[in-house]
Image (cartoon, rainbow, N blue to C red; front, side, top):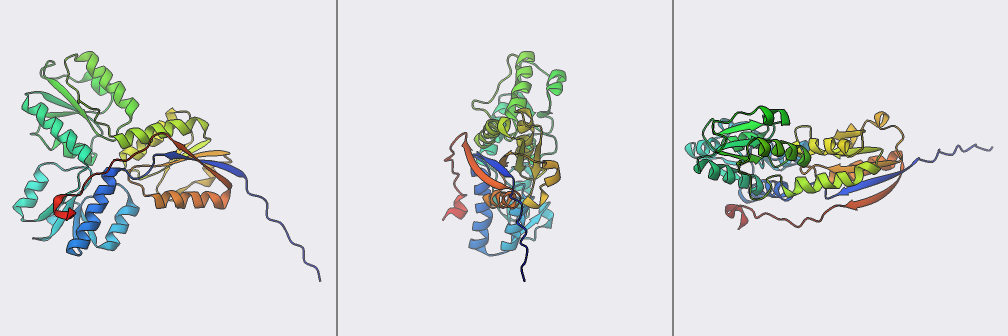
Length: 322
């Protein structure tokens, strides 16, 4: 008796262009290490105020190791250990932790702390401060919370920059959120400098090296891609900016996914080339997961496009380094 074997149709060919750098930055890596080291050193539970970084996979992994995530300090028991997220916190938060005799570790990214210091120095010089950033983002809340209420004004758009009215145009400075679009921010800064020629800016750009490098890498791959996938969370500023950068760089079909399961294969259509990157809070394991999912649907060739090399590392707080 003979059987008829039906051959499976060959998978369509696809080139997957990996943007490099992608994924974890030094600040995110340090923040996660702070949580893991605190759990190892002191034992669980260790409390974390807000998501340590904007990525559910990372948060859930740390929860399994013994981290408990809370929204506010009043959820933390007396005498417990608590960690502040990488995005930074207003000064009122460590003050409240001290008042309740909580043992705290600050996982604020050093590049965010640099912006805090800049803002304080401008304030000491009698300057009013413009913060370019997104309302409600934890980093913006943290930066504005370094100074008395009213000392910092938020500017989100070019239109805001055009209509902003300072108390004294000769006494102005600006700082920026570290995870903004380079191009959008440059447009806003250009308006501010035109309107207020004496405005003081940062000595070195506030947008961090990792945000800049990831955006440049996306600009390098987007014009060649039928679609670009950014792995990241919808509340991750730097991830959302990567989607926008890809669109502006020539790839109208750019989408954010948190995990491989979120890929809309129907919307993707029949691409021949797909660009792939990950926001600064997304671990490599999620990139590998997405590549594996593409291999199930396509005959995949992987190509790396490197826009920059990163070697930045940040030290852990002294209390955890030993």
